[in-house]
Amino acid sequence: MRTIAIAMTLLATLPPLAGCEGAGGTRSGAAPEITRVTYRSWQESIDANLAARTLTRSRTEYEYASPTSGTPSSASTISEPPVTLDTERAAELAGVVRDSGFLALEDAYGAAEGARHYPYRITVHLADGTRKEVLFRSDPEHETRPEAFATLEEFPLGLSGE
Image (cartoon, rainbow, N blue to C red; front, side, top):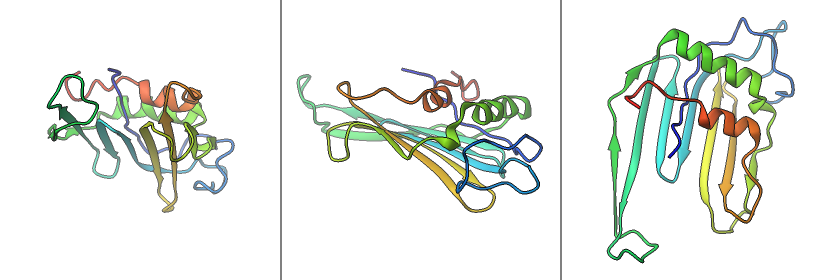
C-alpha cells in the first residue's frame, strides 16, 4: 500500500498558481493561502489542518465472513493519535502542491459516475472559503490518476510512524 501524505503550510509568499481561477483567486500576485488538505479513500483518511498544525489519520479495516466474499461482514475504523506538522516537512509538501498543478485539475477522473470503482478524493481548502476537490474513481478498465493527483497521493508521510 502506498504511503500517503497530505499536509500543507501557508503559501502567501509563493508565486501565483496557474489555472486556479475560481479556486481561491489571488490578490496582488500572491498565491492562494491553503488552510487544510484532506485525503479520503475507501480505506484511509488523512486530514492536514494547517491552522491547528496537526495531521490526523485513520484507516478502515474490513473483515470477510468467507475468503471468497467480496462483501465485508464487518468494518472497524482505527484512528492514530494526531501529530504536529513539522514546518520543514509541511513547506516541502506545500512546494509539491504548488508545483503539481493540482488546483488546475478537473473535478473527477477515472470510471464513469455510477460504475463500480474505489473512490480516492483529495480536497484543498483555501483561506477565502473556497476549495478544490478532485475525485479519482479507480477502476482497472479506465484511465489512470492524473499526474498531479498521484504526486500528492504518493508524497511520503513520514509523520505518523511509517
